[in-house]
Length: 111
Ligand code: HEC
Image 1 (cartoon, rainbow, N blue to C red):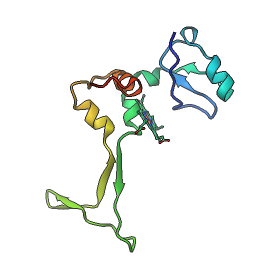
Image 2 (tube, protein in one colour; image 1 turned 180 degrees about the vertical axis):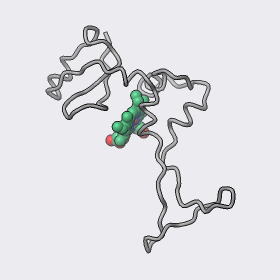
Image 3 (tube, rainbow, N blue to C red; image 1 turned 60 degrees about the horizontal axis):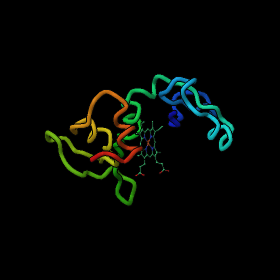
Image 4 (spheres, protein in one colour; image 1 turned 90 degrees about the horizontal axis):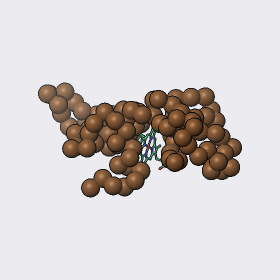
């Protein structure tokens, strides 16, 4: 049986995972967190991971003014990627529209 979950897109104190409720072992999370994990179809799509693991941040100088860090097509670029994990994965040989991203990341079998 699988024990895997992520807390996303729900009210506080709810945790969702990709597996049907009758195929998981909820006791560890019930005992550790007091929360029973539930099936959530949104967790079956790796784009969910990309909603957080794609981070573009503004860059400022010490006075708090936007800092130009480069140019794109002559336009000033004042933002920098802090995290591109999801983009890197979608452009890799592993990139498919499935939960493979999660399996790869959590089981550390990305080679
Ligand atoms: C709601 C936002 C959010 C979503 C959705 C999300 N993550 Fe994360 N993830 C985070 C944050 C925040 C951290 C950093 C936690 C910390 O450092 O304590 C993190 C950390 C991680 C880490 C550890 C990175 C490291 O360097 O140790 C991995 C691996 C990871 N996430 C994979 C995933 C996968 C796979 C998915 C999709 C199944 C996913 N995340 C979905 C917010 C999110």
